[in-house]
Image 1 (tube, rainbow, N blue to C red):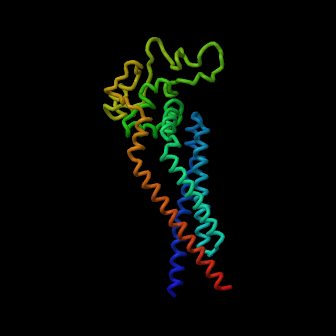
Image 2: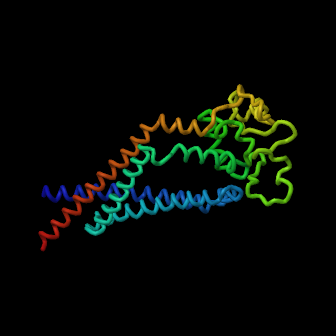
Image 3: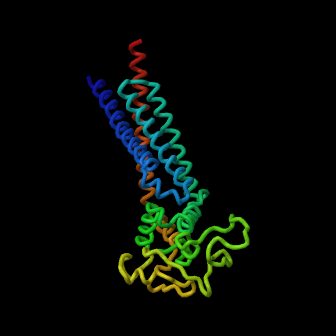
Length: 285
C-alpha cells in the first residue's frame, strides 16, 4: 500500500507540474499569435522595421510551441504511464538545461557581449523605430526614458538624426544630385541654416510631467549646441540600461536559478517515474 501511495504521489506531482508548464506554453503561444494577427499592431509596424518585429514574434511563438510540446509529453507520459513519453520529456529538459548553462557561462565570461547588444538595440530604436506610426515602440521607449531618467541612445543629441525628426538614412539613397530631405546633409546629420534645430520626445523632460505646457515647450525646436540640460535629461539610455542590468544582475541570476531548479526537479521526478514504470513492467513480466 505504501509503495502504491508513493507511486501515485509521484505520478500526480509530475502531472501537475507539467500541466502548469503546458498552460504557460499555451499562454506564450496565444500572446505571440495576438502580436502577429492584431490589426492595430500590424498597422503600427507598417512604417517600422517589420523584419525585426516578425523575427522576434516568431521566436516567441517557437518558444511557446516547445514549452507546450514539453508540457504535453510530461502530462501524457505521467497520465498514460508511458515510458517513451517520459523519456522524451526528460531528454528535452536535459537539452534545454545544458543550453541554459552554456548561455550562462558565456554571459558570465562576457563571451556574449550583452552591453553591445543593448547599445545597438537602443541606437536602432532611437534612430529608426521611434516615430508616430509605431505606437507600441514609442510608448515602451517613453517609459524607459521616464523611468531611467535618460534621453536618446548616448544623449539627447541623438534625436537630431532620428526619423522622429524626419531624418532619413541617405547611405543607400540613389545619387540624384539632391538629398531626399529639405535640409542639406553635412557629416551624416540634417542641418538647417546655422545650427541644427530639432524636437525631442517629451519623455526626456525632467522639469515637469510630459503632458504639461512647460515640458512641451522645453523639448520643441531645440538647437544642437544649446540643449537645455537643466530641463532635459542628458544621460544616454544605452548606459542607463546597461547599468540597470548590472545593478539587478543578482535578481536575474536568482530567477534563472529558480527556473533551473524547477527543471532539475522535473528531470529527477520524470526519471524516477520512468524507472518505477520499468520496474513495474519487469515485475509483471
